[in-house]
Length: 205
Image (cartoon, rainbow, N blue to C red; front, side, top):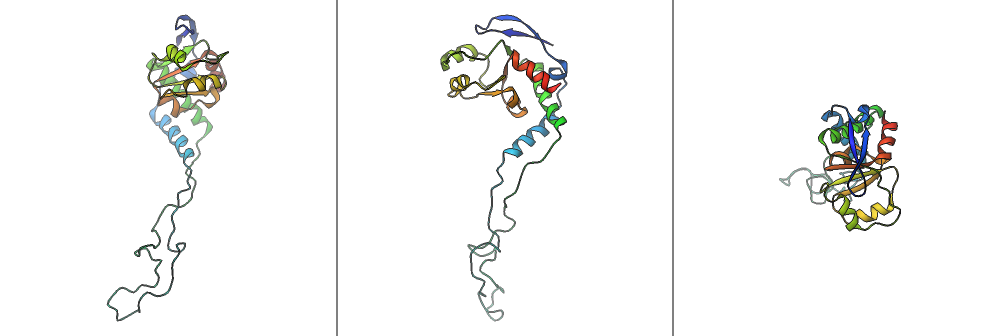
């Protein structure tokens, strides 16, 4: 697969041959869904917690006598049916993450890239690096017509780009080592530099 390379003035300056092993796969939703679930599970803190009958503060003195009151036989105010009592089967601190193999993670990323390439939502630019600070207006003038939401990928983290897109809703930037399935598929466009594509291909093939 070949894609046009666009410069800073949105003019076509050449073509880039993409690796079929990275950008030419037939996407499988089950693989990408599995990787996305793995990503989102890792983000969960797992610090939610409630107190059960054994941990809630309260007296264990017998509320009423065992017989003769006409009521139930309660033995503790910490029981779940009382106000201020424990919670039945409440959430506890736990780890939500699970593991998947590195082969599946790499396959999911290749399929996410292939999805953007097949749908025409992959935009290749000659470079994203900025020698000087860039204004948000200038950045939008170059990429604002591409899509309302976009993910920019370059070889390394660039603070100038991060500052330029910080007020633009729907625009995100990650280095190629941080490229992931969730961020790629939830954005309308994937705008990536030539050097980042070469780095991804060498890492994923």
